[in-house]
Image 1 (tube, rainbow, N blue to C red):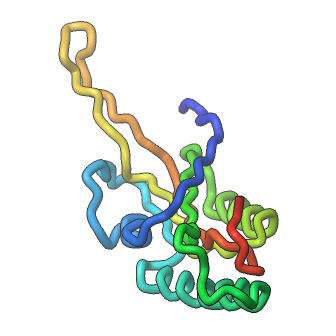
Image 2 (spheres, rainbow, N blue to C red):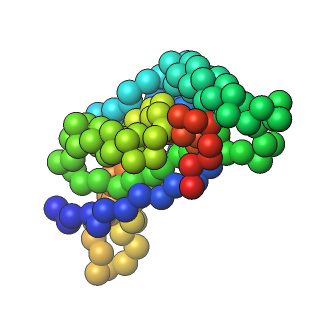
Length: 155
């Protein structure tokens, strides 16, 4: 088994991510069924956590900025991180990354998902390659608030 080089990528999140992560909506490249995925919250639970935390953090921001009536319209309130992992990576190890991000960024993780069902197949297409090769894409998603506890944007 080849070991993955660790990486994580952050971008603005979208509402559809919660259902994708929990597999409540289908995904085309979920082609493996030999290992179980993990997801900490279904889409309804994740949306509730997100809305509740956003309300708390928005209030904190407005309390600290009396002249403002709402968050800036371009504020990113949902951050999404995608990370890769190895076959033997545990939920506890991934949760440790979530705990680190919550503490370091002063944010709230809404949902953690670990996907072991996605990947692609390299088709055998010549005499040198007799068998198709299945390649798994072990990766996870961490959905979190884009605001710290004072309502300021995470940078």
